[in-house]
Each structure stands twice: as structure tokens, then as C-alpha cells.
Image (tube, rainbow, N blue to C red; front, side, top):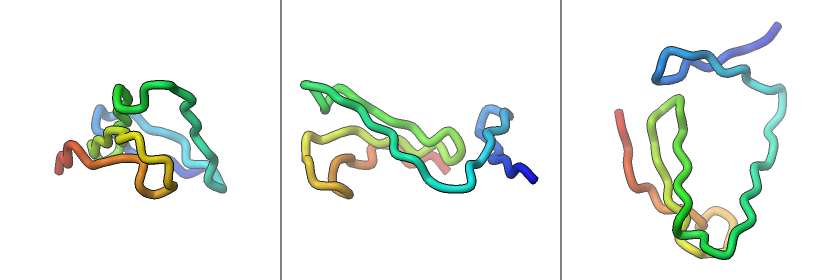
Length: 62
């Protein structure tokens, strides 16, 4: 049975059975922002290459 997540805009997103990697290759990491469409949390790349320290929280919408 498929599981779905409810997004802030009312859409549903299918949940996978296992995690996957999302990779962005860029020469200018600080121009990138990612947003979690389920929670509204936004993160901005900071140029750090250490996994777990690559993004800073810039907006936490509750």
C-alpha cells in the first residue's frame, strides 16, 4: 500500500519505501535554498562540504 505525505499547499506526495539522495552540483552553493513542502522549513546552502553541516535553517514556518 502506498503512503502519502500531505503538503502545505494541499497536494499529496508519495512516500518511497527507502530514502534516496538528492544531489546538487554547483560552483555557487550559497545561491541555493531548499524547502520542505510538507513542513515549510527552508534551508540555505552555506558552502560547507561536511555532510550534516551544508545547510543553515533560514525559515521555520509552523
